[in-house]
Image (cartoon, rainbow, N blue to C red; front, side):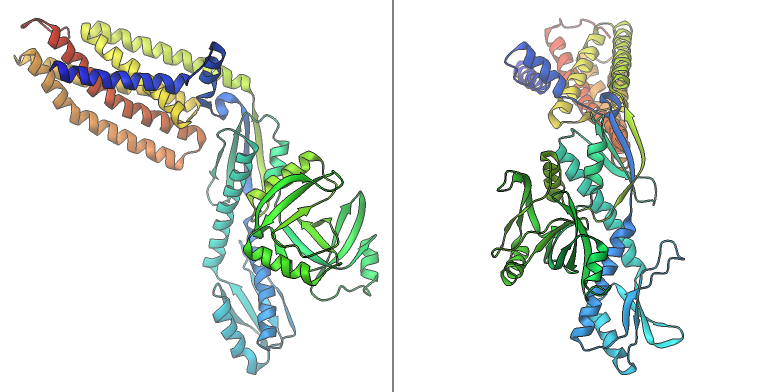
Length: 535
């Protein structure tokens, strides 16, 4: 018996030491101890202060991009399959909400209609080819409803992950990024500690669509001059974009199809060009490097425009073949170069975003919440401890020791896993105190019943723990399931409540059953035979 008690005591002591280290770390001095105590527990937005943003992802942008790519592919396929047509253009039905995305194909000869149908069946599985009423030579290529729904949902998820990567690289501690509302493609972004969100907003909403396009003509001093050089009509498969290189507005006639784009990037870092000005270097994946090498090798001494979000950042001359490594130059400040590299590394947003609301929470409000939460926790803790001592006398000390260890384990676990403490999380701590006492009450009352039935003290204690254990497990499992549902569907503060409650319940099982039982066993091993139990 003594050996068994000693082994369990050593295990509990090891748990206590691990918990203390989880809170304090390994400080070398008093100042480091204070720093560890402040940094081990991360505070949520409602306690630390920061910024709360509600934004809407414009998912139709992603669908429009897909439709545009389908239009270009359809032209290429029709050309390769020798299917003549008069015109191919977008013809969306915007009377519907959301709009129905269509591509109108005009002038299809009757003997080529079956060839077009074959192309659609083989290459455009997300589209349906339907006849246009009143015109036997026209067809609509209509995006399937299921495909459009998938594209919108994917755009929302991709936007959420892209924003998360960008915010993480900014160093914001424990941000919350989650879906918000029902069916409006909205996201909630909570940034603890960020009281000036303007830079964060600029980085989050940048679409960062990087493209490298060959320059067909230019630069021109104005849009009118560029159009006049081509008789007012741009050459086929080209586009006209502007740039502000070295403080001068220039216009370029570019290939419509990019040589490579941001999807081919594997990394981007801020750097400096040969003149010492801030720039951004980038690396390409294997496919991108192969295409980039082929395009640059075939167009030596021509201009290659670096286009970001449909604006030319620079248009340097190609002096040699470029494969997997390149540089973006322009009139950047060091901060702009750093931010551009960040958004390129995190990937392009699949759609633009629109801010619905913005709320800044001051740290003074968080400090006030912490103060009141701590006061409530201390008052509740001492009230419960006092009740246990009065009602259960000596055995109340047992319950209070288990309760104190429960809270120690809870705080240490949050420090180890980096959990975020929110105001609802403090409520979870207080609720844990009540749940912990409830378990001890179930056990103690069961022991009392066994003693009233005339059982010996040792047998009554053993029966009390065994009989109460099943009830304790039932109550804890049902509560943990509820907490799991809150965590799965709740936002940041609600998740904080779920996390603290779950950790507290698991710790409570250990302290109320294992630790309390050890204390009783130790007392019984030291008491005289026949002595009464103080309960």
